[in-house]
Structure formats: structure tokens, C-alpha cells
Image 1 (cartoon, rainbow, N blue to C red):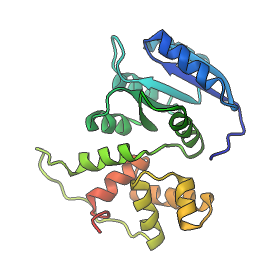
Image 2: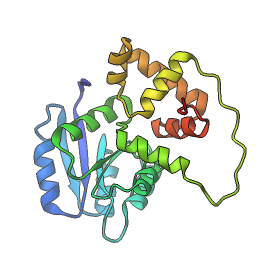
Image 3: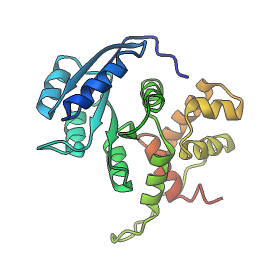
Length: 222
């Protein structure tokens, strides 16, 4: 498991007070959590962020007056380093792909257990993302679906080393850096180095972008 050796501030945005209070109680028990702040509306959360940007935001998609995608877009415009994890009852591909493309770092069902939530928070804090198999599958299906827009020629795929291709496939399966390191018998730091090389070579903004790139260029066909 990732080691978090600094105090972490987590924010909750959800319009249900009881859900926020229960989640805050759970999160405060994590050893590295310094504070949990909560808000029931966008303006309230934005005010908290202006005082101090939290390390992680747990965001509900369904909010009165402003939906999750708009909230995420406006927050990331003002606080680009904010790491957003979506917690939602909606599991359809269109919601997952939309939020990941907007810049969310992970997407979890609202009935996720504590271990899943903790893993997502720790991976987002240490690697910048938590890429679940559900997110990976949603992005792959989204790219494979036909579109009504005219097709445009994709740039030729970049040259990847065999090890980079291997790590890319594992990222697309939703494996964490720790899992990839264990499977390939290499260090986590080496995995992160390869992932960074992949991001630079493909110009992908994040791991979601790597999946899109891999599917569009047929790198997962084998």
C-alpha cells in the first residue's frame, strides 16, 4: 500500500448532511488525515478552497442547482491542482468518461467500501490517479463506439519499447503502480518512470488518456 507521510486535508461536496457526516467520521480515522471539511453546495466549497485548497475532493455528481461535471470544470479552472474523486450512484459509461475527461482522478460507486475508498485516496495522493477496471472498461467502450462525426486521420502511433507496451496494457487493465511493479518484478519507481514516459510520448494528460490512445491506435488488439 502507498505510504502517506504528510498530513492530508480532504473535502466533501454532497448535499446530504447525514452522508457527509458519516463519511467524515470514517475518513478522520485514517492516520494521515489532518482535517475533513464538508460543503453542501458549490459556493460553500469554493469558499473553503479559497481559504485552503484541499488535497483531495470527494464529489457527488448529483447536486441541486449545478451538476457534478459543471462543478468539476469550474473548480479545476480556479484550482487546477485539486484532485477530484467522484463518488456517485450513477455507473453508466457516459458519466465515467465525461468526468475522467474533465480531469477527475478516479470514479467510484457510492456504495464502495472503506478499503476501496482508502485505496483510491492513497493512489490519487501518491500517483495522481486511481484507475479502476470499471473506469478502464468505460473509456474503452466509449472510444470503440461509432460516432456521427466525420473520421479524422490519427497521427501515427509513437514508438514504444516492449516494456512500455507491457506497462501500458496493464494500466489499461486498471492495475495500480504497485500491482504492476509486483507483477513485473520491478520497483514502483520504475513503473512510475515508464508511465511518465508514456504520458510524454503520447501527449496524454493522464491515465485515462493513455487508455484512449491505446484503443485508438489498436495497441490492445493483440
